[in-house]
Image (cartoon, rainbow, N blue to C red):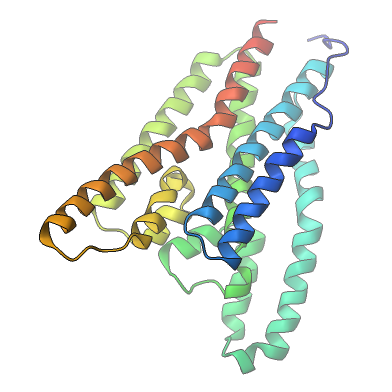
Length: 263
């Protein structure tokens, strides 16, 4: 396939910096003021923005070169993420060795947390055991989910750009259905909220467990009945809104890639 020639590039967009600022403000407000739900809202904004930018970069590469090199893509991601991550984890290991005994931190637990960070499965460990990861490393759960997106989405995009749009659409459709079924199954089985919040397969339902826990309980029986109904509606609407946010970047990428494949 011949290169498509020069194409307009996204470049620097101040409006996207504004989205980053809003996301950062949400996370900071959650940790400083404790406003419920703000932290996850900020993280979801980061996920949407990251998905949009990654999709745009891949489309620009295809428009310029007529192809997408997945090897180069993963190499660039590694060079962008791993140096800072390795440096941070190295500092943490020194901290765990020196201050861990004072803070009651087992060094084996610290090593497991480092392995989870390097292997990008921090969110999985946290989803099954609340204290599986040392407190100082728990924020790496979002980086793990983002890395999972990096692994799954570019190959699907590659199928679209190769003209296999129906196959890619089928894969995405099956993935969405399985995710929804998994969310429903876990809720009905009474799974712990961390499993739904931090699981890659259930991330779209991550907003409602913390919100439902934060709602005050009313005293009277009628009020409790009304609260249960309101909570159910809140859960459904929160899940839908989070799913909409989480799929916005993929939807934008899908429309753009379909246009690119036809051109």
